[in-house]
Image 1 (cartoon, rainbow, N blue to C red):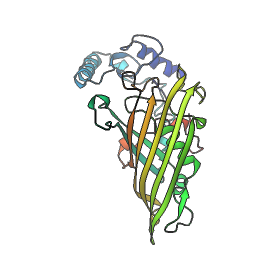
Image 2: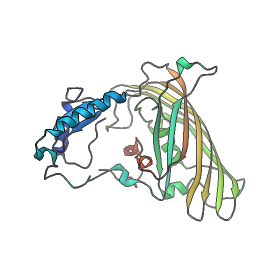
Image 3: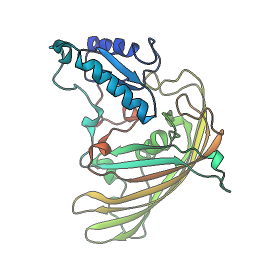
Image 4: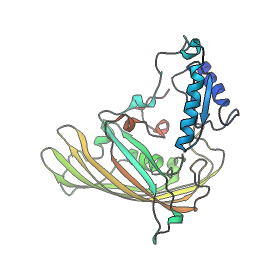
Length: 304
């Protein structure tokens, strides 16, 4: 997917023209890959490959062409803004809850290596301060059982418990989440710490037309895929700093069907996916915005 944010239409057109000269050699469609270009938009080299040696050769080729560029082509145009006008990462919830989600295909029972891919993927889930606090009841008491809010369930089951192990998949619309349950039990309360146990399930089925409007994700085909999950987790919240200090959820997902770019064309039609959600750390790589951040239905996410 080709996304250009923080630049005006003229600059976007410049870079799109550059990408048209890349490895796909065409206008429109996917331009996914690695591009080497000058600040002025001069195309140097590109590739879309998972082979490290091939990528390295492409970079070397681009650097060799860079070395013979005129000095003027090595500089940003005078009209270029000094920084991006909009980045999704600007919405990073510093005082909220950020989860890192690792996902991978699981072995069958009994194990059959031919039915398990070797791919895995990473995404992040963002909750701002108020949403993070809503994982807990107002006045927690040991043994208390409560349902988690709809906005938390919607975010997880629409945008994050999806089959993007092998590639970029599609989210579920609200009406496609046919069943969902997410509840917690307070298992410990002391002066500064609350511990909860989390359980739940979901069933999402997308069949027929795309229901999430015209946007970057709109596919060119009708939908026919689903995901069912069973969830178990635990978390600890420190009242003295108003933050989670431990958080872990595991989910077993049963997938069915394929989407436009999720790499399932040569996979069995059904299979199991494992999800692991843990607290993200403070590294730059863990501050990358969620894949479907533009579809989060919340006012605190600022759009271009």
